[in-house]
Length: 124
Image (cartoon, rainbow, N blue to C red; front, side, top):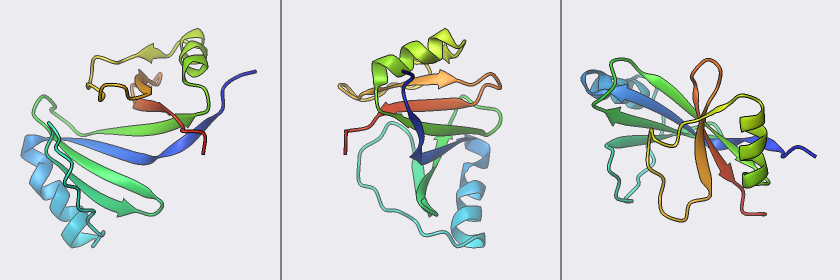
């Protein structure tokens, strides 16, 4: 049986430095999305917004020349999901961003190079 996949709660917009402030202002000031305060230390400057039932992260990334959208998928069986995705030609991209120690997840790329964080749900 194949692992089950569902959309996660996070959408990440990776934005080049020269577009970051205007992008944050667009979502905050023009669209009026509610900002989510986060005191968690991070290696990336980020803004977080409520986005329906999702969280929109806008991350400032110095190595980008254009914006990228990254999506989260949640699976019921992480190891099986990794094998299933590999068997179906998905490329692992764990090098693109370090995940916290002990975090049950990994990065993959879709055929059109959209990055997906695949996380294992906690069984709840």
